[in-house]
Structures are given as C-alpha cells and as structure tokens.
Image 1 (cartoon, rainbow, N blue to C red):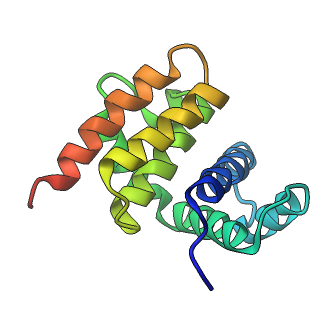
Image 2: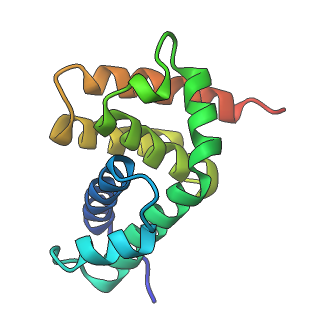
Length: 142
C-alpha cells in the first residue's frame, strides 16, 4: 500500500485528534473501538484511514511516556491542566516526532495547523513553544 499524500495525512491527523480527544474525555475506553466508531463518520482514503489509526493506537500505547516528556517541556503547565485539545495535539506531534521519525519542522507545522483549527486563541503559541522544546530535547543525544 502506498503512503497517503500530504493532504491525506493532514486529514488523518484531524481525525486522529478528534478520536484522541474523545479517548481523553472517556478514560478506559478501547482506542480501536473508539476509532472504529469515529472513522465511520469520516470519508478517508484507505491509506489515510490506516495512518489515522496508527496515530491513535500509537499515542494511546505511548501516552504515559509522551505525557512525561511533554510535561518536562512545558513550564508551569501540568498535563492535566492543559486544554484537552492542546494536550492531544502535543501528544500527536510528539508521537510522530519520537516514534515515526517525522522531521521536527513538519511535525510542528502540522500541529500548529491543528491548533489554529481546533484550539483556542492561545493554542498555536502554546503548542509551538512546547513542541520546540520537545524537538530540541529529542535532538539532544542522551
């Protein structure tokens, strides 16, 4: 199967964000089940659908580790105090950076698009600052 086009990947991220948001507000729900319930309401080419599912299941599986890393990059903001949309945008981008090898510039740009589209007025600035620190931390050898 070929990789989805960039526009399809952006659409995949939009769907993944909405599923992650729903999961965040309904602790204990199964990521696959919630994805299945949401995915039937969105028209997505098969490649985009599989990428969205990969994002949802990957973030769900790595959520605790991602949260620890994101929290270490966000001054004065605990994960649970962040807006639900913002924290899920951060989780999504952090997962793509850390586990899928997406270049930092691309991950941050895509996250900013999501923040503009789904977040509040201050979301893009907040997301940009945290992800910039996250990308720097990830680029620094341990």
